[in-house]
Amino acid sequence: MRAIKLGLALAIVAGIWIFKWAGSDEAPTADAGVSPAQTGPATTEAGEAAAADVTAETEVVMAQVPEGYEQLLGMWNGRYNKAGWNHYGPGYFELDPATGVLEAHGGMGLFWYSGKEFTDFVLELEFMCTAAETNSGVFVRVPGVPTSDDYIYHSFEIQIYDAGEGIHMTGAAYDAEAPTHLASNPPGEWNHFKITFVGSRLQIELNGEAILDWEAEPRGKVEDFARGGYIGLQNHDDRAPVYFRNIFVKELG
Image (cartoon, rainbow, N blue to C red; front, side, top):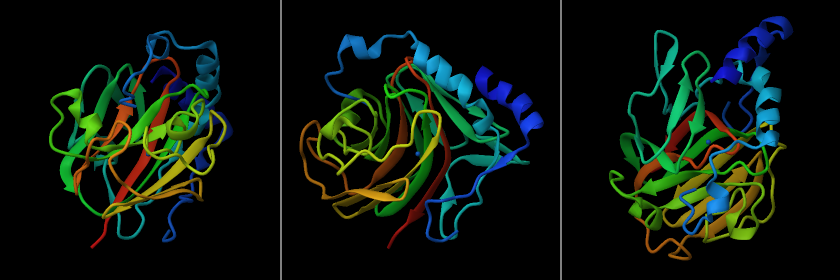
């Protein structure tokens, strides 16, 4: 969070950048078989430089909750909190209570929302990478409370990894279905995911571009998947930080 705190000073000089929610029509890996080279603890120089470059963008006026959605981060007296969230595995997520920005540390672990399970839903969130090698993901329909790494074989991870290809690149249903193309913004800029899961149909938009429309089925690492489950964010490693904010969900049906 040192970089985020530095952003406070920059924001005072430059003025507050007001964020506009761009993804809603109405108004964010547990990579099986990851090599040791992918999980080294050292942050790359590129990641450090990118983190320094984006500090001003983390100090923002947060988006209003779109109509029909609920915000998954808690808030009390104008301050964000992690009420209802739990963490499984190594590492942790750090929250800036003033901005609602989450920063992932270490891993691999899962920061998951325990407030309720979601069946058919639209999930919208923003994430920011600090390098092409930033590795993370958004998990949907996690079946039950994670007590082991077994959840990765029974839920879907929407991948965040610009350096990957095909079923391992940003926007993929990890190890199962590839996006049509890479629609990520450059490192240091916020990205907007819109993930719609109804029945077995999984649709993903990234920065307003439709990149995946798939009738989900067991494939790759996914042995089977539940009709509903929890939503989670992955902390993968410390090589290049990843940030999340504005996590909204709308239940369907």
